[in-house]
Image 1: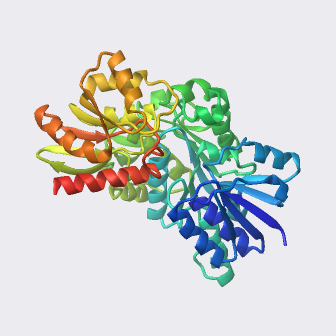
Image 2: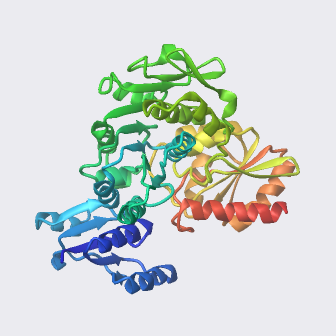
Image 3: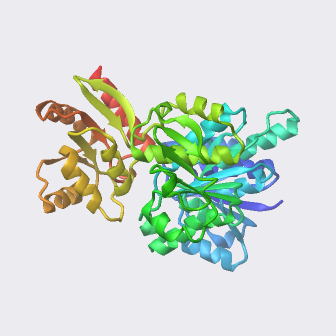
Length: 458
């Protein structure tokens, strides 16, 4: 019986463990952390015949035949390097899923920002067109959960098999995938992020580019400055998109999707009216164009696209409308985990804004974000580990109306008070930070914000 070792007991790790166990592998899972939630997962997996070690690091001396790495685990830690030197195969959870689902076409969506919305829009369109096309990866199911479901469906010989896989793929997942090759690869945006993990901008770019290189057809955001400058020669014949009209298209003009007047168009054909899209902001129009491009490349006709977009409510934690209190809108943008995403959030809402920011700070250029705060924020409330650092940065650019409140519980009533006193239109949670100092994930942070808002609003 072959041995597999899974590193990381998150959703991806659980799914990979169950998939391999079902295929006759002897499976061990390790996680360096311990918590009541992890202990609960441990007990469940043990009942399924899967060994789980909490509070332990992977030891390559155990010599498994295969090591599967969850997305949050760095690809270059010493135990993994040692495992490779010993000839042990090391793959990511997404790669394992691909090996079990490569019999259906994939849409693989990557980018610094915009991945989740583009993935959700794409999945909604494919569903409206009658395809069984679930979203997975960083959105929806872990990819290996989907692979296990399909394995069970095939064993039962029932006709519920997947037509397409719509996968949101992070740089971590691309880095740990050696053979992942989507039918359609989408690159949404590119700005500095995850540099503590990938070290250089060039390395980060090359990891993202790998997914597009392995894809049969490419879709790229022609409004992204970095991609326009650095990727246009590499993918001259790809499908590029632009909100600025057909004249701005690069790549294959017959494939390109663009906005002309009040319509989304392709090759002079009107696909759908812009009024169908309920989400605000130029960035969401860019996301829409890429999702439409993928749909058209898959042969989906305009009526299904328009139906899907007209019924699309938006993505939780990405400029999510929570409610209105005394004429003030409360917006959850917890998914804005870096400066660029947080700047986009500020651009999209109406000023003046009471901004709640902070968390676990990331490396990156904060200058454009700070400038947008100066333009649109009436006050800034800071939470989490980055609060002191952000306060100093704001003072350095002569922004004075800033207060450290530390926690979300304190931020909500203070934001309401300031919004009333300063005639603000919006209270916006857009942290520009990771969440791991105070929360399990950006979803956990956004759910907490929403819960507190709804309790306050009544």
